[in-house]
Image (cartoon, rainbow, N blue to C red; front, side, top):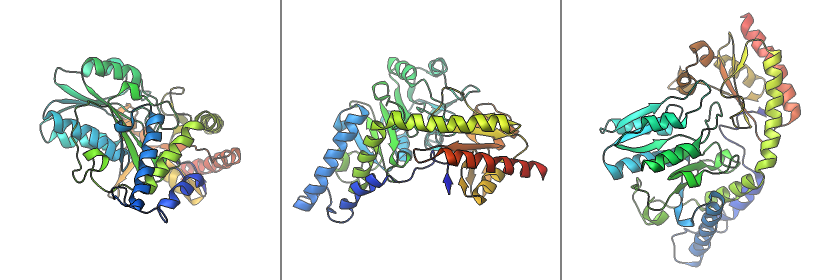
Length: 374
């Protein structure tokens, strides 16, 4: 299989797996236990937390381990709402559903929400954020880079605006961890998911700035300093820290490689396939992302035929209960329905090769021709 869906998940790095295995077999103690087995696990958590804090550029006590980006987004938005009890929220219209659906949940409890649209490139401008702030605005969410079209957002400027107005700013860094420097200094909180940078699935971390007004969502024991109850998955903790360290260390090398592959792919597709159009800004985007619409084709048909040929990609649509709905990201960008519905996302990773690019272009040309003839 040729895997070009790295924005969805990445394969587990073997070195990361080796870091995790001792805590699945030998050092299996509960990190909250007081005996020696528990202390071994507990010390591993402390070490991993310190490492993640160093990589994020924050204090160890500002790092919380969570189940991933969805929990981080829910915790940030709903935690602020629980602390403030009322107010106005700003959520970009291209956020992950974790933020958009959380905001819709809070509307049911009387919170006002502005779903802020991007421009046609998929970029949410800092002035548009400033113009949306009201006297009762308590929360803002604009992601570091979009998961569908890869557009990089002006998070530093947005962070400064939010700080000036005492607005809690949450930055979803799920797509940018290990790819771009963390905007820790410019936000109140951020979230990452380890399976996006060759770590374990179902696990992540969250930075919450000391002194931020936020309430816990998961009550229980005193895990995570009482903020998030539940026994920690020590193996996943160790895996996340190892994966993040490797991703940050190899960031320049990996970015260069994926950008070269992506650009070679784009050049051929946009010149050799008639009616192929790139979605999102051509320059302000992640080095791995290529979101392309193919005139006269349905994205789902392209995905299906590529899959039959052993190529894994993603469409710009989300499938829910068997019904395909248009991409909320491309729709928010103002693209016409035919372009939205013909979009396919190709996302490259560190294990992809030039030979795979050549193969995919050839198969893609055949697939597009076949669909257009039918």
